[in-house]
Length: 89
Image 1 (cartoon, rainbow, N blue to C red):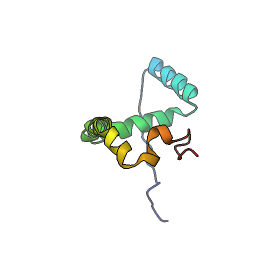
Image 2: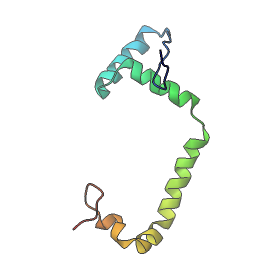
Image 3: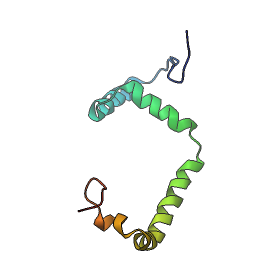
Image 4: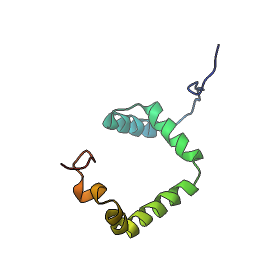
């Protein structure tokens, strides 16, 4: 049998009934499963915390330099793009 990246390991956890009910409500509201919510939470628990600040740094850089980017690439300026992100005709 070949083992690839998509292999998964089952983990059993116990949560209070109230938390389980809240997880089920949220999963239904988001059109997903409790397992998917918990898997996402597990990914977030092991994610490198430096990535959180990196997104903030990138947003600030873009905001501070938007005019320069628009001047350098006028056809790609947000005002010239349609809803799909393509250059407006």
